[in-house]
Image (cartoon, helix red, strand yellow):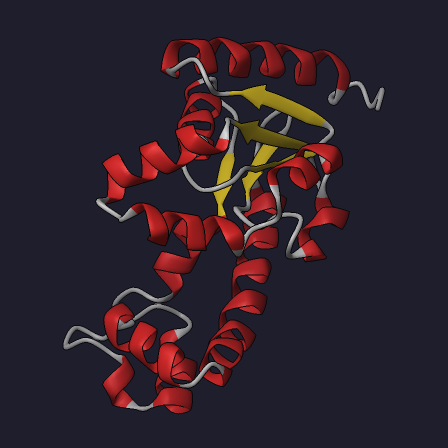
Length: 204
């Protein structure tokens, strides 16, 4: 990479997006793999031709975007479809992430990858890994409030992610997000100063 990259991750409801937003406010280039995935699968997105070829026009909405509800149903009835979709999307998301990182201008960049440690292809790109963490009950309550999911559904999503203690064990740096947005922003500010003082001078 042209500049050092910090990989930002955390479990669902941990506060990754709020942390990424604060880094962006501080002038740090932020590349979010979820946003890239939505662009690739939006109307006329770069992945849509391959998806249509693999799954047929029934996988598309009228405006040419991925029909997420139809795709979820297809994956539920045929688990192999999930691997087929991932085989299309994951390389495309990675390639676009690398392209944006190479074009990023700043002292360092932040790459947001929700499943950073589960999908290890991004790790060689990174100078540091940063986990946004909170206790599991707080995660559940936040996602239920934000998305309207039932507790059982949130727990199922969490069960498919790396266990919290393993994510923390593998992190270089941690932000504790149990105390609310103001405290989170202060911790991001502190990490920003730390990265400017150390990452940029290649002290790691």
